Image (cartoon, rainbow, N blue to C red; front, side):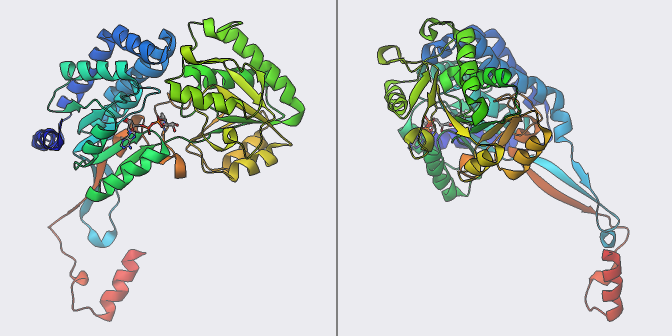
Length: 459
Ligand code: NAD
């Protein structure tokens, strides 16, 4: 598709979207229901595609891809009427009689660019609030997960209204051409590097952007933590999808006295989850491609593998690995790992861990394992992060009332549930001033008495 064809596609979506009554929720509901039917009826095909791209197992596919989007859909269908209601707010006395409200207005046409690690979820989950808020959208799935991209490219036009949602498959040239078009929101999930390219392109049209980026999400294990439980939950969040999860714990800062016990407990958890040889486990995913496999091979050199360490390029396999003895300045401690390698670093206490975290860019997620409430309070308020879990990792994502997004270098803007609805809406301010009465004080010429009365009215 060339530039003219993209322009024609966006114009067609915009013209249709603009023709719809902004208060009409029926077509939005209809599209969301059809999307639900698509996922329910075609779930096996979606699973097959995800298996082909990442060798994800069925339960993981359901939990983190199809089931996740179904959860967002049910929540939106149940709540969108409430979300769409105008938000009333008091009007100052000198403007009475009047009513003030916020009306949630659709933005227009959204561009949703996804990445490959959750290739279905990361384009379909943002589509839910885009439609719930009354927008049209262009989806650009990741070319690095070609089977899932092809399934999205085939199923979406088959189920959803082509005047509301279009799919463009492709890589850098296609995304670059799309970014030349004028959209009303660009919702991008991917790397910080490409996030900058997207934001620059958006600046040309002054298009607002949501950037769901990555980075190094730290995990602090305090001396008061329940070590075995912490190890199990951290390993579960880290090694699902072979560590290729934006919110996976990137590294662990563990209180020195319990470090060995913790590493032993992570080894036990890996054995329980994936058996003696994870390469043989049907539940353990693969690395997306050879480039990333080589990148991870090199990161393995940055420490000693206390657990795992095996890798096999022809099978795109990297074992669930715990690295010890890593240097702060090494690549594995400087760049986002995005793979099944977990550096475990000793810290004297929570204060030292806090200082370590705060010296680095604000992460997408921060995890803390502690039973001591004072430590929980201290870490919660003395750090900055897009999201946080206490005694858990990753599981803040499926809670529909919690906003999901980054801060600083890990991104901007939020979605999931009502937060997504608002992200894809313009909060239009509407003041409806009554006409029965017109306060003369507000009009010139002004007297001293007018001024004093106006001041008193302001309170
Ligand atoms: P990426 O940034 O290379 O690609 C993402 C999308 O951008 C793809 O659709 C791709 O086609 C497009 N793209 C790539 N290069 C481009 C260019 N030069 N111009 C225009 N478009 C381009 O993705 P990646 O680095 O492989 O993804 C991994 C990153 O994504 C990690 O940093 C991870 O943490 C992050 N991530 C974040 C979230 C989140 O929700 N915050 C979720 C998943 C992944």
